[in-house]
Length: 224
Ligand SMILES: Nc1ncnc2c1ncn2[C@@H]1O[C@H](COP(=O)(O)OP(=O)(O)OP(=O)(O)O)[C@@H](O)[C@H]1O
Ligand SMILES: [Mg+2]
Image 1 (cartoon, helix red, strand yellow):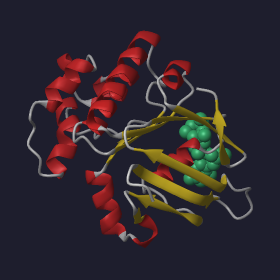
Image 2: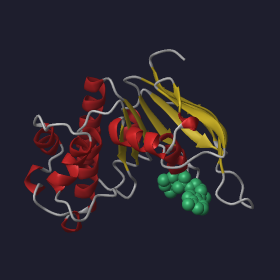
Image 3: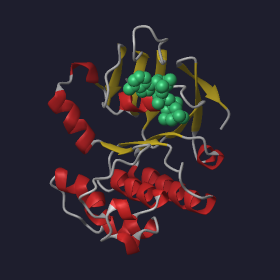
């Protein structure tokens, strides 16, 4: 595998019930260092299913995923947890913020889990995302868009090589969505990280280097 490939998936298949048709069916995918890839497709086409597989939250029925050259199919739970903690930033469709932690504590969590010191990244990201006044608030007291921006900051704070985002601007107005994708793009390009995002937003798609559509369980090239 060429060194610049961050992640490569081959022949992925996933179905949720033996009676149901497969959601993913022989899907191939790869992303390079520094690349922003948008995945589009109708609701229910399998975008979240795919992101959960490449984020090691779920296992495929068939196929394999390589991360930084390593075959992940042999990983045990500890290796998967280590990958999610160190190498991955994940913005969930439903944010998944921890309710008992403040905004600042939620964002700083990946640093803490990795034993890293905060060099000011938490404050910088909060400012860049326009949530610097919300640091002491708890997730339940935030709007959907504010929770989303907190989740974006948390995904970037430890500068992971791979960032996965499931509809990262789904709950944002056009102006805020523009801010979020601008911060995302800058952080990804500066860190030389890769960003894989599922989105319905034409603006997000416009920031992508490549756009792929999920159709009948596979990815096909779509115009950027
Ligand atoms: N845990 C699950 N158990 C059973 N079926 C599931 C499960 N998760 C997803 N599905 C089904 O798999 C299909 C793909 O779902 P998925 O969430 O991946 O779609 P999506 O493209 O992310 O949609 P959206 O744009 O609405 O977020 C859907 O038909 C969904 O109902
Ligand atoms: Mg989804």
